[in-house]
Image (cartoon, rainbow, N blue to C red; front, top):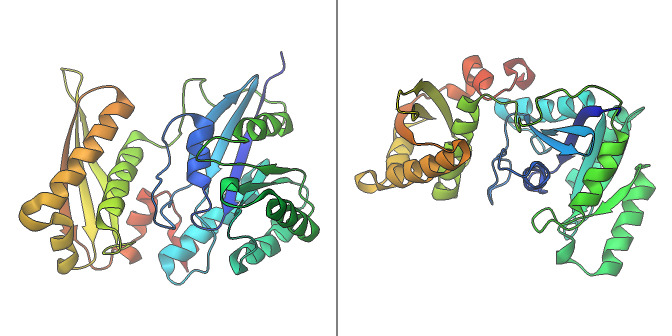
Length: 301
C-alpha cells in the first residue's frame, strides 16, 4: 500500500485551542495546555497515524503583536512552521469570531498560503448557536479561499476525527518520517522542561506570566530503571525567586510533585526530579536560552 506523510501546521491566535487539538489528534499530552494565553514556545511536533498516513503536527506559538525579543522569535517560529508545512489549519474561536488578530493572520495567509492547502477549523463550537457558526464560516470563507471548513470542539473531540481523516488524504505520498510508535520529536529533556513550566504557569497565575523558563540541566539513567532529572528554573529578578519558591518552599514543592507525577506517567517509570531556581536578569537576551526552547535568537531582532 502507498503510504503518505507530511507536516500539518496549526496556526491561530493565542488560546485558540491549538495545543488541545494537537494532544487530541496525537492521543497523548505532548504540548503544554494552560488557561494562560501564549504558553507554547517551541514548535512542538506530535505524530498521529490515520490509516496509511502519518501526520506530523507542528504546534506553532500563537500569532499576536510582538512587543519584545521573545515575542518576535515566537511569531517568526509560528509563520516559519506554517511556511514549511504541507497543510495549514487556521483555528478560530467560535465565540470570539473575527478579531483584529484573526484579520492580521488572514493577511499573512495571503502571502504564505499560495500553492498550499489551507483549511479552516472553527473551534469551541459548543459556545455559540448554530446559525452564528454558519455566519462566521461564510464570513471567513469570503475573506480567504479555504480548501475546507470544519466545526470542531478540540476539548470534547467533536469533529476531530473528520478533520484528521481529511488531513491524511491531503498529505503527499511518502514513506513515514518517524517510527510508528513515536509521538513527539522533541528530546525528552525539552518535554520534561515543558511539563515543569506548565505546572509553574498553572500555579503562579498572574504573578510570573512569561518571565521564567525551565531547562533540563541533567538527565541520568539509573541502574534500577528510574531516571534522575535535574532542572533549573530561570527568573529575571530576586523577587521572582521568592514567588517561585513560595512560603517555606511550598510552591516549588507542589510544582515538583505535580511535574514528577506527570513525567512518571509519560515515561511509565519512576523519576527523581530536582528543581533549582536561579536569577538571570538577562535570560530573555541570551541566545542559549532560545536554543533550549527551540527558537531562533536572531528571529527576535
